[in-house]
Image (cartoon, helix red, strand yellow):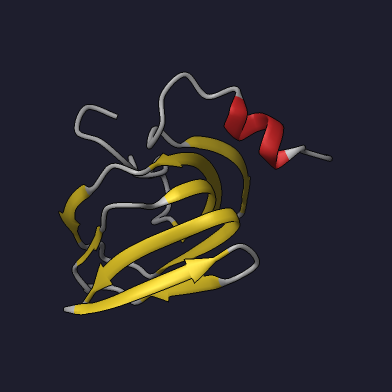
Length: 112
């Protein structure tokens, strides 16, 4: 299946609300739009890969500031607290491993 990721992200109704692009076994691939807002710290039981298609992702991960730009990927290891810092804009793909029979976790703002 072919997917135009940028078009999928542009069609999302809200920034920071992720959309499932596909699953391969227990791995989910999600996309979202970043709009400059910050997000509260969070951590997960499994690692997640954050791939920036365009723009810049500005994170605070494990107490360290990290900027990932277009074409770069950052892997947040399981259990590491991370938060989005101001100025994150563009298109982000999130790849995450899912426990069997668990839907992809929400990403983004509360209520997503």
